Length: 317
Image 1: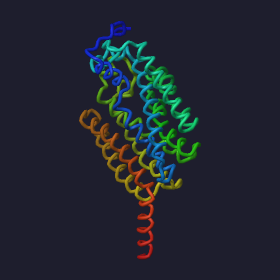
Image 2 (image 1 turned 180 degrees about the vertical axis):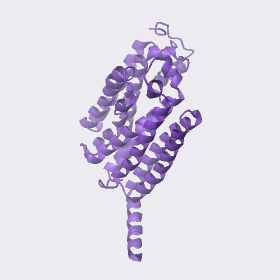
Image 3 (image 1 turned 120 degrees about the vertical axis):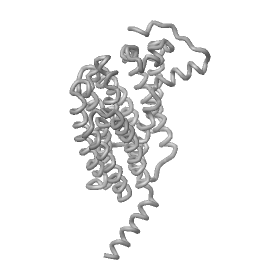
Image 4 (image 1 turned 45 degrees about the vertical axis):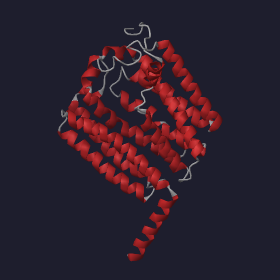
């Protein structure tokens, strides 16, 4: 493939470290980790084991880094063809694909071993399944061949909360699957907003993202529909599953109202790039703040305050 036969060239050791670091696409990982942490806090009812939390997040980081590195290897032809990605480590020749593969396998092995030894086998298997699903189902099968690539492929990014829940409880119950489904439903409006921004790049390399195949109007209609599903779905953690309480419910309603407003504005202006960018950025903020609300709501002190407020209001009525 183009861009893969070049000899590695670096100025110094730190440049090598930087190149391998860039292979992991580090900007993507924090959002995966915050969903893992939120799940662990809910599962532990706010009594989190800090050592287990750190190990689980480290294992998740290594798994995500492995998956992203494998993605860089597989998509090296696309990355070389697009001006925006041509300077990435592999297409630029700074890292050879075979070296990147060894790096990815080491990261994946460390993740599985760390989670198996210090957490439990279920969390390790779930993290591994995320790598396999991301590469085989999304990157290999869906991304280049199906317009619904990001919808189905979004399951890979929905696995971290399952890892977190399994790390705490050793099993998966309905609340864990609600978290999984919440992120699964959130992924299309999040990613399609990005796809609207870089539609021409995807068209150039013939990746059938929704805006490329169906156009902007249908894409923003789909963003609108999914957003309308995500917001009420987020409240299932409160009722009927009672995994979260009043604080989370209020946060979910406020954050969801803004999310819906952003989607509505984009629906009215499907060709407005600044609005697509605003929607994309807010979708990230929405999930991060929603997960933060889950963590805060799970704290025993918040439970005590909520119970006091509820009792006080009940006595006044």
